[in-house]
Length: 316
Image (cartoon, rainbow, N blue to C red; front, side, top):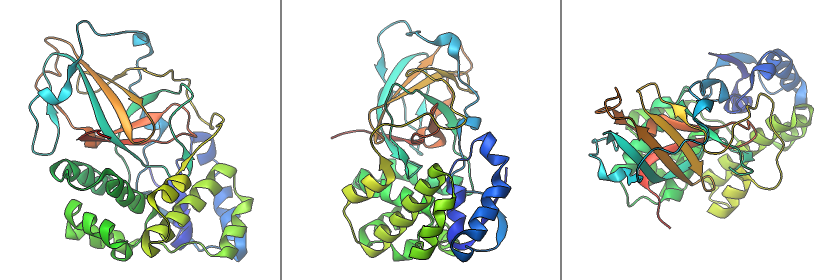
């Protein structure tokens, strides 16, 4: 689904996941942005780099709340791996402690008992995000924080050829040259002081995301600030209210994956997620591939982070 957003710097609005009630008001948001700070650009149509939201998490299975599969959970990494870093499923109960990544800068991290649901990777940069996550498995020497910084650059539409040297080098190994060039064509600048001042007319969550993405673009391209500084900008802490369009989702709720198995996500912060998979004996899921790079764990609370999954084992 395409949304009406602003070009140039205001295209960053598209990176904010708008829940259904807000979508109906998008015309008003566009007019507000056009008036803010003397105007931020003309209206156009576009799709955000990652658009996956609670609307796309259609496979939740409340009937399985409290269910624990029979038998002892086996490490998922014992299963055969595919060249892309996926796992060929067999019947049984599996657990995987994997690296996960923030894909929604300017929102709160996991916590508060809010559960997460399965949804696919969607958006104009779906292929780029999936490629980065898959290739990260084959390049274990690239630190997790560099993969995360590259994903922040993709979501925030930073110029990849202006990234800090270490992140630019990671991009050269995790993306194709064609993907690198395409991202630069749609890059944005940081918001000016006048434009930032104009954002006060917008809803608070939209302001937060726009400011965070602008700050990240500056940090990633100028070299100013440490990873901890970027993390403080991208991942909010403290108390958080339930966002508009939230769904009551207890921690540990299962999703019935369309390939025939059950899956649930239990994050420990944004960078580490315990994934549990239940494949019933004789089910259609036996022999199917679970590819973490095609999964986003979507929070029931829309004010929290959506988390990209990867086939990399988490380690301190």
